[in-house]
Structure formats: C-alpha cells, structure tokens
Amino acid sequence: MEQKTVAIIGASGLIGSALAQAYEGKSWKVIRISRKAKEVSGQTWKVYSAEAIVGADVVINLSGASIARRWTDSYKKVMRDSRVGVAEDLASWIKASDQPPRVWVNASAVGIYGDSDDEILVESSVAGASYIGKLCEDWENATSLESSSCRVVNPRIGVVLGGGAESWERMVLPFKLFIGGRLSSGKQYFPWIHIQDVVGSIMHCVDTEIISGPVNLVAPQPVTNAEFTKQLASHLRRPAIFTVPRFALKLMLGGFADALLASLRVDPLMLKTTGYQFRYAQLQQVLELEL
Image 1: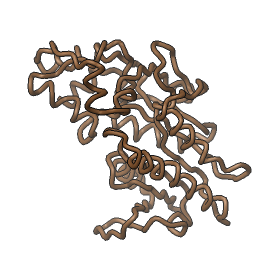
Image 2: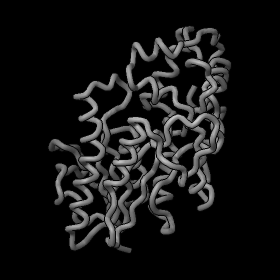
Image 3: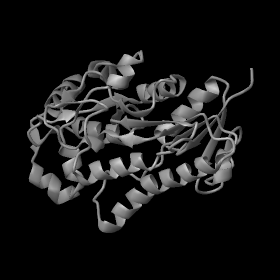
C-alpha cells in the first residue's frame, strides 16, 4: 500500500505536534510546515509556500495567533492575517494545483457563534455578530474552493484541556495558589475538549468522507463556568470563594474579556452522528487524568 502524506501548518504547536506524532504512528509521511527553515533529526520540515503542500494527500492548517491577550488594532491585524490570510493563501494554492490534496482541514473556533446564553449550538447555527464571530466567519469563508475535488473541513475547536495547553495551565494555576474562582456570574457555558479528542476527532474527519464544512470539536457534556470551577476546586481540594467581576476582566483584557465570558453551549452533533467515540466525554475524566 502506498504511503500517505499529511502536511501540517502549525506543527510546532500543541495540536500540530500531537497530530504529527499520531500520523507518524500510523506510518504516514508527515511534512511539517513553518515560516522559517527548520532542521530536526528524523523530521521533514518545509518553509511555508505553495511547493510545501505539493504531493500531500491531506493538508491540515492550524495556524492562528493567540487570542488570549489584549486586542489592540495592530494585534487584530496579526490575528486576521494569521487566520484569514493563511487560509486565502492555501485556497489559491490548492485551486492552482494539478494535484490538489484529497482533504483540507482548516482550523476554526467555537467563538464563531458568539455569546448565546443557554441556546444549544450545532454546526448549522448562525455566526455571531461579535468581533471574534466575524473573524471566524471570514476565516471559514476563505476556505471556499468552489468546484475543486478537495474536501474541506472546518473544525470549530473549543477550549483545549490537557497538559501543555496554554488555556488549561492558566486555569489550573490560580486554584493551585488558593485564589481560584468563577468568572463573573459563572452561568456561561464552557465548551471544553481534551487534547486527545482534538487529535482523534480531526483524524476522524479526515477518514470520514461524508464530513465536510464546519464540525464542532467540543466534548459532548458541556458545563457552566461555575460547575467547572466547582469540580476543579474539589478535585484539587482547594477553595473556590473568589469571583472575578466582568468589569475587572474588561479592564485587564479589553475586547478579549467578551470572548472569555461568552456563553457557548456547543454540541458536537456532526461528530456524534458520524460515530466518533470520545475518549474524554466528562470533565471528571480529564481531572482524574491530568491532576
């Protein structure tokens, strides 16, 4: 059987490096793509260009500057260029290719839905009117290939939990220091997913030919911020008596505070209906594994 090839943009990040290892474990050839030339023993690295994806059966793009900081006008441009700009590049390269990839997986985020209270959000739900909602919508629209034979998947990734995840480390540390607590009212839904399920579900999307377009990558049992806080504090045997008020978050984080406090009751409908088996469906399983 001919060896398959996957090209991963963002392969040095948490999800990208984990995906690369998973595909190597399946005996795929893995091409890691970065902006700057790299040489790592036992790995194939290529510089970001149209030539870098030539011959790949699957292209996975995970690029995107972190949203977890204050959104100045200059940084908004960085966020947009690293998402929409890269997607536009890839779309133009794939359209022009004589041998396009079979599948293009281009990351998106659950932030596309915007603050939705307790509404259950599935892949067909409308995009929100917030800044991050519009950014994600433009990001996904940039992956349109029209009549190309390449299948496009837009995984809308939730908050990633697990060792090495920036969001996870930031959430756990205050509790370890006895200063953890809920954010604002705590009633907002928290769309989490474990890193192993991010990797597993992306590979499931690649292998499942009926999947295209948006796919919610979140655990099937969402919790509110208050419930997350309660379970995390209980597992660490720490108090959770503090509350970080909305105005304080706005002062510290600016526009990012609105994204942080958005209620997103996201349902992984596509993954469930196509038979993906979650390794970590319940928050308690993650806490027992990671802490």
